[in-house]
Length: 173
Image 1 (cartoon, rainbow, N blue to C red):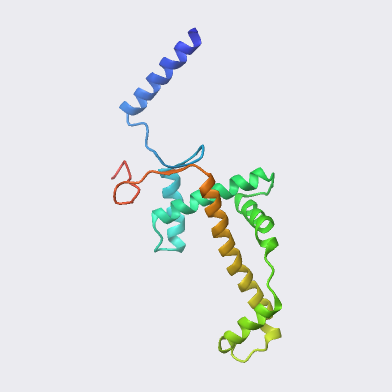
Image 2 (cartoon, rainbow, N blue to C red):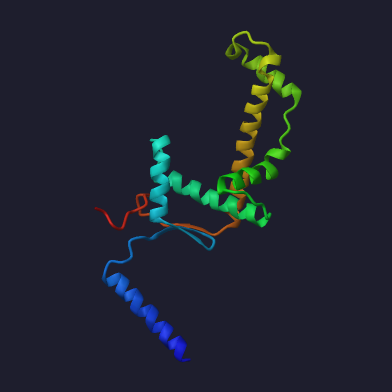
């Protein structure tokens, strides 16, 4: 009983101290089931992403972070292992989606015929592999969108936005 009393008051005092001294500098901008995404995590990812995609919005980055968390959770459920999260995601997507994509020869030929001017006189045999890679990636992206939509439908996702649909920085400078 004594330890619960002490713990309660310690947490209460610590919370008061942090609030009174301005010690809390971050806030949660989204929840994905029991995982939080903080403003500082979003800002860090946004800064990195904006370097290579200057037109991207914070909302788009946040949605990408949510999707990534959902996919990583599924990969871990499958007990996949990899040296990095990026490699884990690639392995998951390869096993769960890419392995089931098959492009028929007729589809390759049809694509070649429909886009023959883009190949500048190159023979089908010379561009076949590139066409197949393109069609596989296109199908992968379509199936991945569907898969993510299904995962989002099964998850609890709460994104905390202001009325203008923008994530507000609680500590403007």
